[in-house]
Length: 205
Ligand SMILES: C[S@@+](CC[C@H](N)C(=O)[O-])C[C@H]1O[C@@H](n2cnc3c(N)ncnc32)[C@H](O)[C@@H]1O
Image (cartoon, rainbow, N blue to C red; front, side):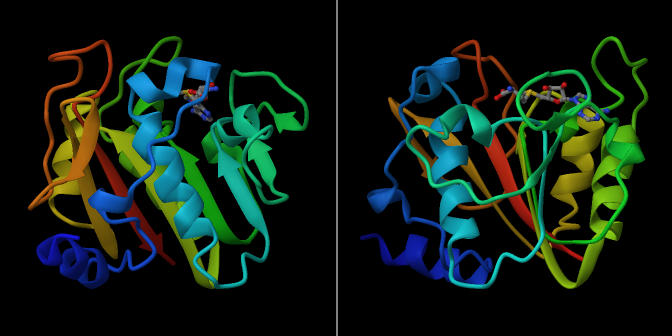
């Protein structure tokens, strides 16, 4: 195991994040995960969820984990997604979510808020979505946000200023993904149809 990688995992607050050498990429037919950023987002999110702290009341924004329920032990949670329909999915805008949550996860979703049709493009709206969700956390609550980089430049710019309590990025490396030395925001779709790098950050209340 690379000692630099291990140290960085811990200091970044992601002690439960699998080091690159032990990261088991997630391979599932829904969304052909092995080809895209879900390959690394899903194992990091699952390791973070099951790091040992009680999860309490859980909210997921963007209906992602449900698609992998056949192979993942996904916690009981409220699921909100503005457009996608599915069992137990509430079709609500992120800004209409109320309540208090101990754990919030949002996977590859906030970059679409106020950025992609049918919503009008509104720079800064994705940042406001993260801030709104953070405001729903209990005093000891934690939120994990994943963002494929190079999709929403104003959001990348904000994330690069390190508003998260802890953050890492991964970039493509051949058929795999590696933790980067510093936060890295590569252009979306440069060598494949998907992300070249992905941001994963923990936000607190
Ligand atoms: C990349 S998809 C994630 C879900 C998809 N099933 C998947 O696994 O990739 C992003 C999701 O963000 C949702 N979304 C976009 N704008 C939203 C908003 N303002 N509030 C809540 N959800 C939103 C979309 O409906 C979409 O399902």
